[in-house]
Length: 102
Image 1 (tube, one colour):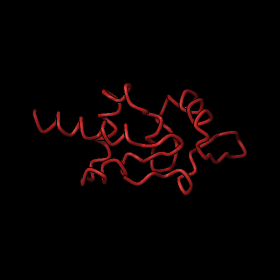
Image 2 (cartoon, helix red, strand yellow):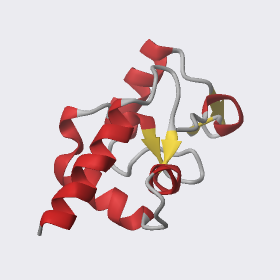
Image 3 (cartoon, rainbow, N blue to C red):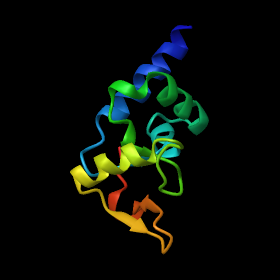
C-alpha cells in the first residue's frame, strides 16, 4: 500500500503546485510523475483532491471534471483562466493559453 500512498501524495503535490489561472490535464499530471496513468490521477482527484486546487486539473478536451462545471467556472473567472465558449454557451479551458507544464 505504500506505493499507492506515495502515488497519491505525488499527484496531490503536482496539483498543489499548478499556478493560479493555469491548468493541467489528468494526463499532464501523470506525465509529470513519469506515468501514463491518467485514470489513476482521476481517481486520486475524486477521492483526495478536495484540499488542493482540483479545478486546475481538466480533461484532455479542456473541460472540467464532470458534475463540477459550475463550481469550476467560478474559480476560472476568479483566476482569469483563459476559456473558450461554444455558441451553445458551453465552456472549456483554452489549453493553448492555460496549460501548465511541470
